[in-house]
Amino acid sequence: QVHLVESGGGLVHTGGSLRLSCAASGSIFSINVMAWYRQVSGNERELVARITREGLTYYTMSVKGRFTISRDNAQNTLYLQMNSLKPEDTAVYYCNSNPPSIWPIRDWGQGTQVTVSS
Image (cartoon, rainbow, N blue to C red):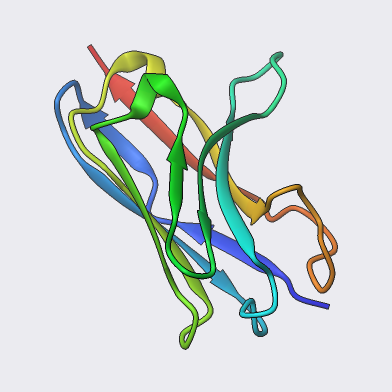
């Protein structure tokens, strides 16, 4: 099974940028769609962006034009470049397959906190 470790979060001001990384402990090449999700305490986890093995992408409307998802299948790593950050982007960000927990992924990682101050 593959474990996921997210990193790159932090505290930024409105308009700032962050680059999130998701390192998989094993190959994610077999997984067609990988994605970034986010969750605000008390709310359900929501899909932010997803990418196919071939590089086709989808973004939720609120981040379109500001976030860029990418994947490096050789390095088993998923990225999320976040620009023009807004306070409403504040959340814990997670990576996973889409839909979540497709083999060999079993569980969610610990996530990485992104906080955008106004």
